Image (cartoon, rainbow, N blue to C red; front, side, top):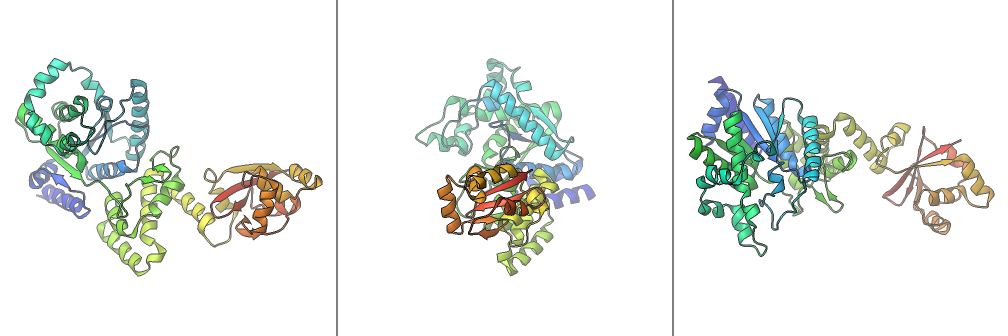
Length: 430
């Protein structure tokens, strides 16, 4: 009884968080999860070398199951990635070559293991799909699926109704994913597949195949696709996709993305993307609503999600860097150090600055040009005249000598700024 009660509380928590969009019989699923640790899987197609924030919901939900003792498999689609999933697409995906797929698979596997630890097993459906011939596939899988069922799935029907249509290659994707579920059930005892709501048709195809071939009951559970109240696609900005890889999206920008979360979205994101108890989320939202201008909920969201993806050290660094760019407090050497990797670094020698002065140039104007903040000495003079230049967040209007520049150093650096958004970390060497 205790295990069943625990599994019921777990599923109730998922529902409260808005993570149960579609499911098979929840009562039966609760019984299954309460019996003993269950093996389940979540799939990711290797369309890039890194997952992006659109994958976060899957990773965080996977961790929820892991944390209560269940046994996760993460499937990376080395085989299905060669075909392309039509779900949520209005056009055909570009087919990737084997070398690109292999590179992407390695990147995603390393990322998943880094985020979720050694207790998560990563499997590649190429390992079993590559052993199946077309005739065997048609006999073992195709005969158990009717075209009527397949075209009734939303992912297929929407593409059939579109101008682009759907190729037979993508039409067959559903059967490939169904075969994955059957194979993992047969070989690994996997009885549950999780995914986004756009995967429901593919998941139910696998459940049907297991029932028809094995006479057994399998389960599926989907979460809703995250959307933003402002109509923008979650995980997209004017600069492009927000990636989980620090090489593709630096942790500071990742943290800033969640800090900019709309008030209308922040409660949902706290519930779905963090492991905070719902009672704590309610308390955070109550504080937020009392003083929305302080954006406490957004700060909590950004800190929690960034800690999960990049670690606590990057959270501290992101907050310190934000204090440099947006805070009104006094700059310190430690704060400036936090912007390394975020702000371009410029190294100049004291001799170069002195030489510019001896040639009749102002040292600061010369530095503005050599740092790339200004296009020419005349541009530098104009920016200074317009009070658009700051050193360590203090506006500078007139000439600054080489000796004065050196006196502005805070530890190894000073912050040179033009306007609101263009910054340079300047190191002056002997």
